[in-house]
Length: 153
Image 1: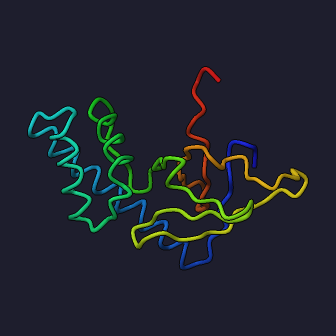
Image 2: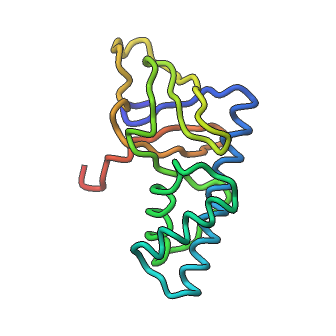
């Protein structure tokens, strides 16, 4: 893993919960996208209200409101979401309790998940601490990817 990624090491229950979380978030975002297109809503309070209603319908915590609204806003000009597409969390949503654990929002509340640590790195602070990061499913493994990096970087 590079300084811009963190491989999560969830146990089997946490893995299933992360899968279910991504699936439910994506279904809620797709439903909100469809409603926004049907109602010709592109942004603002009306879109936030639609997203919030869909998150509530899929029984997702309010923590997902901002990242889901951003995703739906962006998707109105792009394709819809797959079942396990990534979701981006703000730095405030991720709580690092040392270099080897991160607490992240899930559909069942916050969960602390172990993170792979390269001991050669030698830092007491994880490189992603204090940064926004996307939860990504790659080859049935979960990774947090630095969301502050742009194409210009």
